[in-house]
Image 1: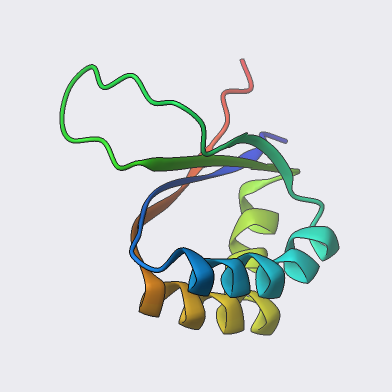
Image 2: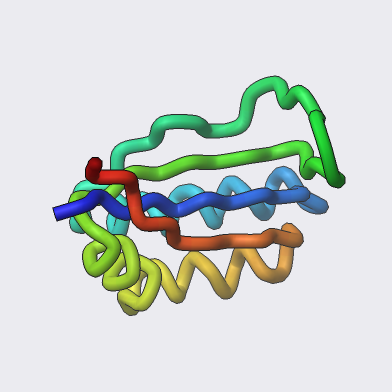
Length: 97
């Protein structure tokens, strides 16, 4: 089964408020076995418009990635994030070839 990945491009408008998002999201990430592959860090813009914070999170499957996003715990965190940041988020199926 192919892994599932959250890809998030984020622009944080309120760094203190974003800390509350991170803290609130952590239990959902633990519950669903999230593995952070990229979490912020320098960005090299090649094409298009980059956001300052880029995150890649690995899950065992697309279904697990979606279940984490849809979970009550993560949705509490997402409500906080939406107030303090602008984000584009996707779930991508990993290549299993």
